[in-house]
Image 1 (cartoon, rainbow, N blue to C red):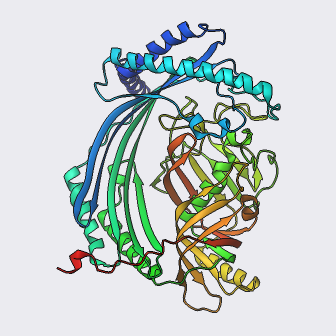
Image 2 (image 1 turned 90 degrees about the horizontal axis):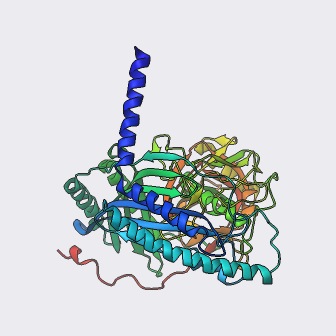
Image 3 (image 1 turned 135 degrees about the horizontal axis):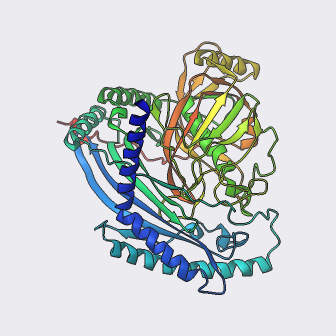
Length: 564
């Protein structure tokens, strides 16, 4: 009987899937117009069209923000954005091939034309007309670029990597799973935001502040000439607050905090946000009167969430597959497969299939990438040894296939991007022990103090050849730690800098306190949701630099609401 019930349940779910699938006007329109376009354009010119893909982003969103107890911004939107990918030539050489020289380094070369549908969303003829117009422009553009590629090949040196422009694998999955739109009590959200934003009004040193609620329901549609028909969805919720101040010597300081969720039950409570606001205000206040950190080289701890951002920026971007092949890239790790690039107690992988970490939602979660390839775990480093790269459907020598990391936002070409970057360590100690080890390193290195970097605003890394192969981590809140037992001292006005290969070798221990960074990352293929997980890290040595300051004086008068 149990087997019959299970079978009946499966049959009902399959019927429901088919019913939704067959009634989806957007999917039907994309599929029908793609078939028409492919059949009629594949041999329309001397240079053949060998692949076509349509992608659609069906997005509904709203946002509310509050400042000093008042709602100062509120809006909502709903639209569908369409994109067409056309490949002219063959899998070994097509119109997407890198053009060497200045034109190849132009980020605009990664942009794509799009069509937007505001309403109605279920008019098949209207959708097809949009796709028809889009396809015509994309096809002509692809023909033009293919001619440029052929000319560029004739006048430039042969590439070292001859692996081609498109993988031999085909994406033929049929998958349908839309994310249902979440319903929120907007009036309740307004009340919470107004109440929380009033907390900043108590402090005359805060120059600006804001708290926001943003929600997006996103469903992606992919159909291509391989046969794929894929619909997947995600909900992205975000609450964030920010505040800023200025020191007497004219340095602008800021702090912020974000909370990510994909359902109402994962939203942070008002009490939690309130406590975090109080803590952040206290930290900003102490930082205003703290000394400026002079350029420094010495031991430091990078705390867990800050370390997660560090890995995302400094390591993750450098193992994106296309960067190992591009003639304009520094190719830091291209020739280092099988080599030790960091301490042997570290293992790193990227797995978009991981939905959460210790109950925390991961923004980098997805089931299929933007090329219709199923998300897969990509092992990048195992016991300190480089094992692989994040791959899209652009092959590399010895890496002929995608591992489901081809990503983009609307209006951009797809490239290999991060999803959920996870750092695991075998050399783990409790945080208090990590601090004791920091003090030992300070004494061993004969430095007057070390640093604990507790919060950062993010960072950036330079990967292209024509610029220094360096990184910068933007520090928001840090402490000096003295080996003689003096209290920790807040410091300001510095960034952590360096080069990846050298910095990785300076990691000597980790904590057992993994935490999550959730964010939205910008690169050549636009802005995509990402996550990273890391424990705190102890470095035997880091390097810092001073930051620029505005030199403007603090306001002469207090905020007007303090005169009431």
